Length: 620
Image (cartoon, rainbow, N blue to C red):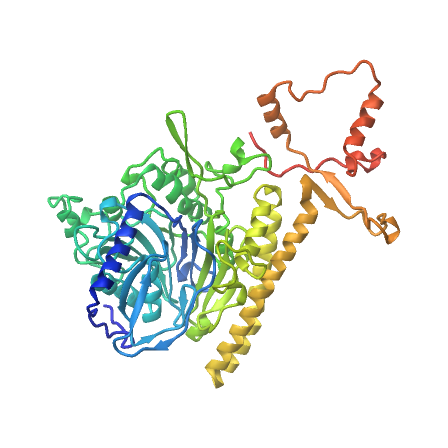
């Protein structure tokens, strides 16, 4: 049922290398294996939210991806299309660790790839589920990140991509942990779950399920495919040894019916963290869009980690109550379990402004017990994120869009690029800053600057989110005219059309970064020093326009009544003002006014003192 395209179909065997090369590769593999064995993680805890074509508002395939890692630096990758001589080799570095793994044969022809989207409208995302420890760090030279980009460069449809995955792991081996992949094109979207064979043999076992048209799905660091049809190749395909390998290594009883075999429950059995800190992100998305109004409560005990049987788990896909747009998906990427049983803004860990985030680590100990912080969809340790929008009614290089953002998806502004784009903006290019080098030209650092300003001032979060969403709406509106112009150009010269769209995208993204740094300046002025600073209006005093300049209105923000109650509970009378019978109350009030000098609370005129604004989020 899968036919590989002629370009890139010529895969020869690897040529032998000098013994010194073999030693260096062996050392690299050993280093990689040790990283896995000792739990040296790279934060590859990601989230994919998936909308099939029939469930989307514009009849496009849509899915999101967040590269959540504290060590990765957010840039937009680009692989130009190319022709390659027979015998050309491609060097492979592990995407997470940076360790050199070896080389493979290059394809004779490779396609243009921008981010995780190619010129044919094929896009791929992933989340790492890990799985059985004995199956990690196997023989080979391919990691999951390299597989994604190699496949995007060599295939044109989701089905071709699945075939390519199988070919790559069979030919070159697989060294990463278990992965869930989203593989989509304008017509369909699949979830493919794959895990290596570890010390046992070369390669990987896998299963891929097509998400039914009209349904939504998702995965988030927990394998999601349980039982799957064994004889329905239009909707499910799998490696020939996905069951027999499990029997061979003692993970499945050969006496059980094959129809009962569950990929997830065999290779990545559910745990507390698999439900509470992983599947819960999919639950939050499903709960928001589900046609079933009882979905949230039905699976609440499961995601709380209180009911962990295989039968208690959520379905792989559900029917949504209404059509979902690409802008809707961007908003779902900003989810923090608000209003649910997992809402993290309501306990003391949220701090005085009701933050949805916690300082890492995500698991911590107290006494003899372990505790967790919630792992939300929007998360502070992200490197970059995107929403793929794959439309089939336009020429493929124009029909595929990748809405790309950096850092935390909560505050990202997603800038659109087309699959045929031939270059990336300076602000998103490799070399514009790095993880250890701040750059005022870098999108990664621009959005980190704003986000890190907001984290301890969560009352400003909705303001920044609203501004980001407004920008995304404006981008979508601008694309209507841009694509109309591009289609006219495409009739005469496709290259001119692609250049026109590329130039517009590059300018838009670089301008976006300038606007983000400007936003940081506005936020700094507005919320500096724990105040809310604003203008007193056109008649504000200004020292005559000379030394000192304009005098702003400065309000003391204060805390919520619930937070003040918490302080009193923790400290008793330590901060309590004692009754002063010696001096009149007016003198006391005057002293307090002096201490609040420069704010509305320090004004001599009671009429100028407004009620202190309070954070929106109420704490326990």
